[in-house]
Length: 84
View 1 (cartoon, rainbow, N blue to C red):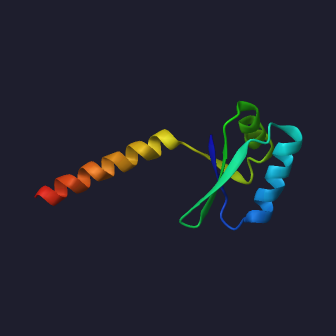
View 2 (cartoon, rainbow, N blue to C red; view 1 turned 120 degrees about the vertical axis):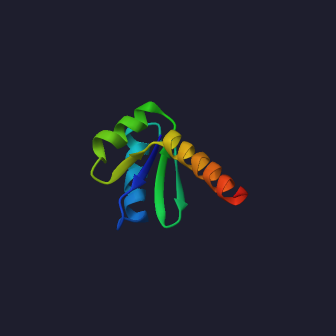
């Protein structure tokens, strides 16, 4: 599951989240940075629940499926416009 760190928060917050996951969860997580946004990604359901319960004020869950569908739709629209 992918979570977006709220704007204005940085790597010190990410380190605190990582320390908490290592102490109370599996600790299997990674960080991605994309266009100025910071994402925390976890693959274990226990870590996902920790992020949802303990850090909901700092993170927003990201629906990857919806974003992928939006990108595909945008590409289709772009190809259609290019043909006109």
